[in-house]
Length: 81
Length: 509
Image (cartoon, rainbow over all chains, first blue to last red; front, side, top):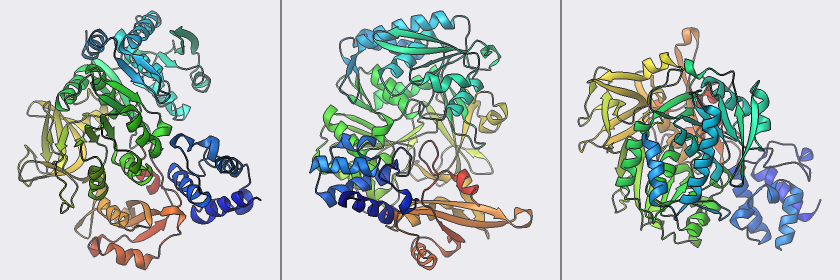
């Protein structure tokens, strides 16, 4: 697993305490659309990504297209860097 | 013409070239454009609905088509029921059947999920000025059997304690007195840009839509997804130069925390209205310091009475003020009384009890629920009064202060305990995100009362030690109010209005 995905996964499991086993949280596990992450946690995740990877979200970029899985998050972060 | 019909036609005539609606994609619709859509769709509706009577339901996402549909129904003289497009189809189907709806306006995207549950319905796609509507005709319905007021304007379904939603019937007179009061009190003009944050099935939207239209203002339609994204909300105020902002305290607290408010001056804001829950002083003062150029108002009123009291916040922030601001005094069309358990009285200093509301805004009753009407509505001094279920206290200046919900006030060992006060204490612990405290009766004959505090923690922290929670709470509440049990939850159950779902908590093992 890449550095980005692994850092995000650690954050989701250890900081946001997502109710899912580590082995079940795969690259494609839906995060927002499955309601695994609620709207407040999504905003906390955005804060984490901005700080950790020194990127900036535009308001409309906080959405399922960019945040719904580890894979999509990685793509978004890489695109921003 | 009934109240809202005249309001709409007047607005079309007076403000024709002005912008009525704008959406997040920067698309606009003028009053003239809206009039064309409304006149065309209402013509089609009249054809399908002729002679049927009964309400027409609308299940359309928050877009121009939703507004066009609501206004078209008003124009035909029928009552409307706004459905929540994001609610489970079974809930919407329940409402459609409960209100004997014989016509549903929806979209091509939503009709497949709604339609199979409505046996024997026939779909008619209709194109109007580039928008496609799906009209579902339900001929088996029998609206003539309903007991509805003559001048019914719309029915708003609110969550009921039985788990089934109940339909609050609002007449044209109910709606108009509040709308006219709002336009007057907040001096709305065609120059105003009004936020539409609440979805149309919530009563807060009545102000946005009709006070906005009747003053020729521009209404900014904000989608439910964006309401959950404070970054977008803060940006929308700036982008559209919104001047009237009507939101719940929860929404505004989220904007302070996540909205990146430092980026904007929000100088356009003139009026900030909040309602629906208590706004705690710390975030309220923080917001007022940012938006010091705006006037703030606390509006109060259950769906059943619409807004019935209001409080104008003083211009200066008083840092010593810790108690939340009062809900104020009655609006011009409302009369308030207090039932202190022994008698119903006018508002006098120091009286405490359940708030009763009379006047033009009191609903025409719940649909199909005569028993519920009998317990919620009563006659006092020859006026129809609604029992709000809210416990209030009246101060020396005759300002009304909200204390709690009647069913949130419990007695234990002779002490009166306000469960919300325990929640407020828990909220002061920075690690706690949300708290919901309930009373559970147990033991033989359910005589034993236990107070149970459910809470969630911030940023995924684990649960807190019980001895710590107890000693922390003792800094905020007397010892007789300490919960018997603390339970850490990963997620707080919520109602459709994003409030703590106490019945779900009570149902927990």
